[in-house]
Structure formats: C-alpha cells, structure tokens
Length: 365
Image (cartoon, rainbow, N blue to C red; front, top):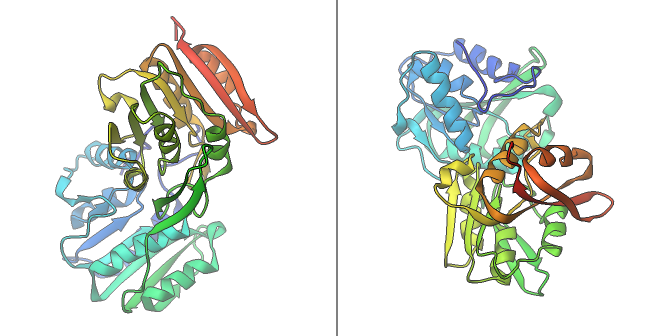
C-alpha cells in the first residue's frame, strides 16, 4: 500500500503511520476477522482504513483533513471509498461491531471519548485493539480501559510500540464528554465555556488565548470577522460581546471543536465551518481575522499547517484588513508572516507570548 500524508509535509522525518499502526495490523492478522464488522477511531492519515478496506470498516472522522487523507489514500491505492462508512465523532455506529481499533490519542479525555464510542457499539464478545508508542504510555490509559472492560491485556513491546487487547464489556460508565470552564471576559462578563473531549486546553482557557483576548480591540469598521482555528470559540465569543452586530465566522479542522463553539456563541449572524482551508468558506473577505493557530498535532511539532493558513488569510483579507495572531515566542512566526503581508508589527508581548498584527498582502505574495 502507498500511504501519504495530507496535507503533504516537507519534513522527511514525518510519516503517515507509526509502528503502532503496524502492530494493530499484526494483531489482527493473528485474529479471525473474516466476516467481522469493524470500526476505526483516530486513524489520522488512513493507514488502517486503507489496509482494512476489504473489511468495509466504519471510520470515525474527527478532522476534515483526516477525511481528505483517507479518501486520497484509498483512491491512490485503487480502492473505492464508501461515504456511508464515514462517521463524525458524535454519530453512533449504526450497527453492532465485532472489533474496534484505535490509535490512542494524546488527549486522555479523547481516548475515553473514543473508547466509549466503540464500547457502545461493540457486541458482548467483541474486542477493542488500541495501539500506542511506548514512549507515550501512561498508566491512566490502563485505568480508563479498565472502566469499560474486564480484561485489559497489554502486549509485549514491538518496534517500540504496544497494543492493548480489551475484552469483556462492563456496563457503560458515567462519562460526560463535555467539560465546563468558568471564564471572565475582559469586560467583566462571566460565563461557563463548554467544550468536548480533546478540544485544545482541557480544563482551562489556555494562557495564549487569554493574552489575545486581553489585547483584542475591534474597530468600528471591522464587521466581517473570522476566528481561525477557533477551538471552543472563546475568542469569537469575546468579539461577540464587544460587537454583537458583527458577522462572525468560526473555522476549525476538528469536528469536536466546531461543535463546542456552537455551545458557546449566542445566536445571531454566526457561521460555523468544519474545514481545514479558508477557501472552503466561499466568496467571503474579512475585515479582521484572529487566531491562536496550532503548531503541534498530537505528539508532533510542525508549523507547516499554520504557515499555510497565513498564506490563505492574506488572500482573504479586505484591503486594510487585519490579521491578529498569538503564539509562543519560541515558534518564530514573524519571518513567515512577512512573506505574505506588507505590514507586520508586534501588538503586545510578555515573557512567553507574542501577538502579531499583520496587514495587506504583498503584490508578489
């Protein structure tokens, strides 16, 4: 099988799969799976979906980029995708499954969310196989798995990876996938921000986002506004409190982030976009774009996605429009922003974070 990453990366050290993916397939090869019904969670680039295509598995799709990657890799290997087998994380598997497989995500709350998803559809004698790299192991993985299954078996290490084999369904434990975070905005308004498992910065509003909100001002002529990589929508909510008549757009690659933001924004001229590209929003230009962009995904550190988004922002700003971007100082976005914008200045900074204000795309950008 030829498996590639989407979006493509210039970092040759990054692959579209790990030994944990391979270990899952190795374990399945030693299991009778012919005629069995499968569901797959956290298959980031479609390695498992492609290799298990002959089983016609369900795939839980958490990211639009993940969906694009799975579709691309199936087609590149001459395999026909079945859109009816692609489910969002809040969509139950429509039939009982015999086997669930999953790469354990970095977020343990998301691990529990996925495990519950598989557990609820699993037959009484079904099994779940979870793969992970040994360097990412936490005893909490075993604790969470033990809440759902009587038999939790951890394999020997193979190529620095392991699998968990889970059998013997327990009663569905009490798990609320929505976290609540009390937060007071800069105007003194106190609200409870809600977000699903796995959405960035579980348990609190991250400090970079708080720093951006503290220094966020919306001018009188900024009406069409985009919160890019919007997460739980708290930045957009801060804008909504400052300017209730604004046309707000929120975009995130992560389905559960978009669904979280729907819980936190007041009704009105608000548009939610589950997408990994601003181009998908359509023929809309923005007076203001705000973002706390991702510079890592799970256990990877990679700013390529953020830089690609900067390029897209430059093409979607109205003349005189602004792009406000907060980041950790060590990430060093300034050189990249200067490639796409004529003006790029530091709006605010402290010991750890920096807010860049960028305007107007270069003619040769």
